[in-house]
Length: 415
Image (cartoon, rainbow, N blue to C red; front, side, top):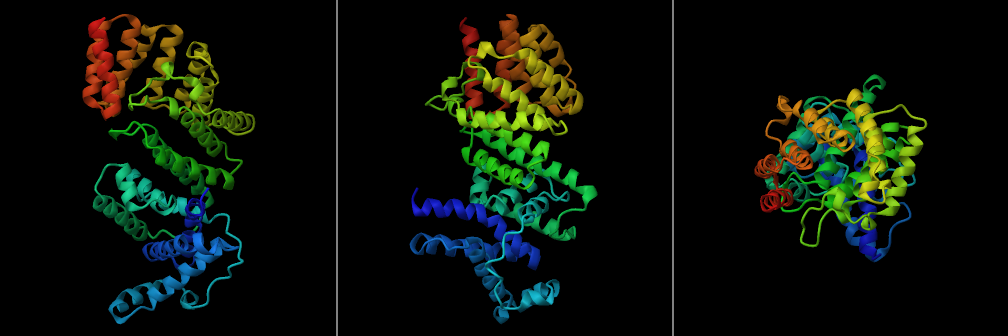
């Protein structure tokens, strides 16, 4: 590993800790983030040449505080901003002394920052963008590229998110105990959405975005380190590892999608599978059961089958039935229909799938048509399957998925 890559990885890990340390003291999201970004730039320039300091977090915080203090005490052109910031800061915040660089990191700071980025006043897209920016350390340009929107649009979204947090009177502190479980649920959901967007991009030329899946896994690892006894945090980490383990086998060299049943399982990441299985096995034995643990258990059953035909579909169906009873949603029903078809035949799966036709949340969703096509093909109704594959292809905005669905339809036309 080169000095530059080592520094890059360390800075990504330390960035949210430094930002959280400043936010705890100074409260101003934009000003603190700007100061941390300047400190990160200084570190990225100096550390590869001069070496990483003994206390890299303290170094970043010290430099960021100095930059922030300089900004607050800036020239007369910034007097009005200084007055606004000064009015909101505690008197001791204006001193020039640097913080104690030997101060250990506060264990809750990153978690507190995650709670702040997932504040209930924000929409889900804003929560995702702000989390990736403030906690993940991605640039606005990188986030915009991931979600296929102009950088200016993403910059406005992040800016509005910060303004909404300020307008809601949010403070940099852990939420009250009676709100913490619900807020943690939101945090987990946001990280789950980040991972899913990376694993199967909703639009664009690529099936998957490894930068987003890797970032989601890194953030959940951090969360698991802080909350090792939380079953759902552990379950989400296990789910991500077990799912991402198949990434290399999901596409061919030309980018074409390979369905699960046809993947070369020797290309799956055995180490990630082993870690994921160990995590979910441990948490299922001691924690209160939740939806991420159930999904991880399903992923583990898939990953432990050495061949597609060895998959224990009865166990998967039982897990989906439990998931549907505790956390019902149309995507669970969609996957449950596939498991039901594998155990009791395609007609049973199609019957369950039919219950989603009147669900407004699935109106126009390509996955409903795609699953229906698969089950119709299993049932031997090739004309109906071809029609459903074509309908799904028209509705998806993902180029690899559209190509796959069109190929399935064309293959049935030639059979």
